[in-house]
Image (tube, rainbow, N blue to C red; front, side, top):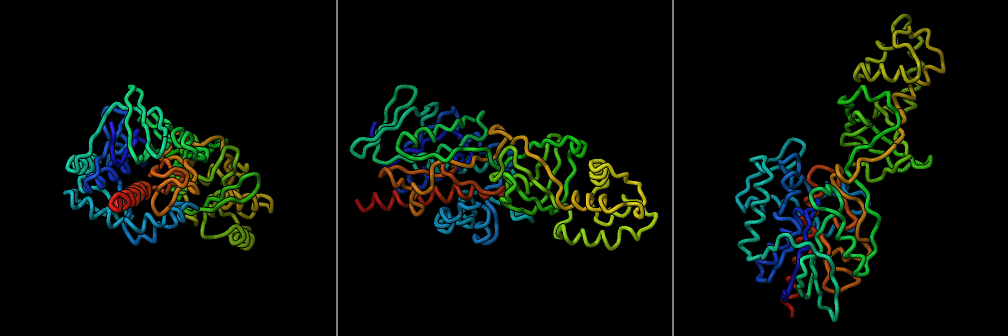
Length: 417
């Protein structure tokens, strides 16, 4: 079968949940014949579980606020994000009848708080645009000869087209059907794949004494990532202790930079620095007389059981009078409060990571069109690319923005033929 324009190769990965349908409906509305191949029996399985089934589909505020949320990949994404912005996304869903609400943290959800409403809106748009879906069609191979693509599926069917869009996402939540097939297809077509790793995930740490703090959080903690004793990055945000290690926004959003055997140090007293606290302890601790260490520490308004574990770790009696704390113990306390070390054993795997970092090398894709620099007519959108954002709607917005830019270019190119 010959399709003049476009294929969305979709296997229910993270960004693909929105990029495939958004690109498809836009192309369909421009009178392009669109075929969307779906490996599962239904579409949008990943979208339905997004945001615990509530689907935080973008972030409010100026689009410039997005620029710090994609690590070092923003240069590639900037054109897409400024062409189809978060405001455009909100207007799009409003036009489909999906009312939305903006939370105090600027996260944007459907007013119903049901992800099914977002999925239904996208599918209805596709239906009205005459997009053809073929379910249970897992793509096995894509080849190209004389600028015509041949798409072969496991069922033995073959499809032909001048242009192909790979929107297969990454490897996160593999039980939903995402197995990294897009990387294999891209590599066969001559592209380089940056090794995929779990991102937006928690970390499992070597230290076991903190497991009793599972569920406890520390607000506005500063973490610093160390790789082979070299400082990599520092982040500030809320930290959560788990029964296996650390989580919370500050860990999840910085996990893209972490590897097993790295060390994460935590400053629980941020914005005070290590030197600030060291000077304060030196000047005041010994003068508190009979006041117990645990009482002295309460001024920092951290949970008492956190102080207890920190004291136990360095073998200081929490009831020790401040006047009896020697210089070594004082410095150990300061160290634990401002540079508390956690050794990474492993990161949460693809089965729990929200997105995948790594993917199709960005230098091989045109950021103004999403078209391959290696093969005319081949496009990549969403998480199959080596881009990933913070939590809070940034990844789905990137999916919409890259899909829009891709579809826009295909439409403009076709109209000039």
